[in-house]
Length: 293
Ligand code: ADP
Image (cartoon, rainbow, N blue to C red; front, side, top):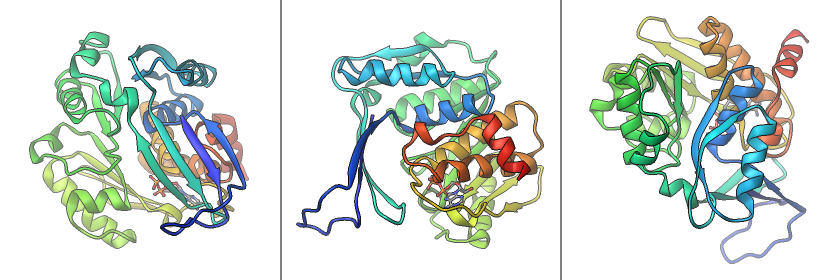
């Protein structure tokens, strides 16, 4: 659950400032990306955990109303995952995470929910559950023949031997830098980081560059940089999640890579024009009508 405060400017250490308004909005990278997949037209089942607190039911209901299958979501004792988000008048954000139930999703829980990934086309993972669980799903799903899309957020150094299990690694500038050690701030440095990642064995890598767009490099495909759409940013909270979910949905339906990047960029651009996380993720119709104008 995202607890969002709008502020004029971020507080300095020791400073107390007034909120211009606040909201409780269902969020979480996994849930946001699941909603982005479903809203973009994909068929998506969420695997995850909520707590036994008053937020749990509204978190599940939010996924259901956006078209995500929730039958594999577990309930754990204690609180659900929470994010305390502050958004300034420029649309930039600061986020403090509290893992809650997400931190309790064990390897055995996932194995019980799904013990065979061979019927799954794409498994899309983030880094908001315990690393041992994530790592075992990456290995198990890829061994079963599912394609693994991994968004290592919050950023983490990925063990070398894991890269060959990854079909598509999707990172923003910070994540690219943590993984590769290469400072990333523009398409040229992003391409250097992408080459490093391909060299480790991932089949494809996408680096998202905020207002500078996104870049795809694959073992089988040359580098492709797509600029961002120009929109008025209100809240960039779920930009990356929206991009990733829309890209995964487009890829699953066989959309050609260059077009899928544009499709995902349009979805993300629409998301930054609205406040909130799941509530700002556009539908397929909205994405397509944006692309026609
Ligand atoms: P994250 O939210 O993970 O940091 P980015 O900031 O890189 O991810 O944004 C992901 C994608 O969202 C970008 O590649 C771009 O397509 C789109 N995007 C982000 N910010 C903007 C913006 N201000 N205007 C238009 N598109 C944006």
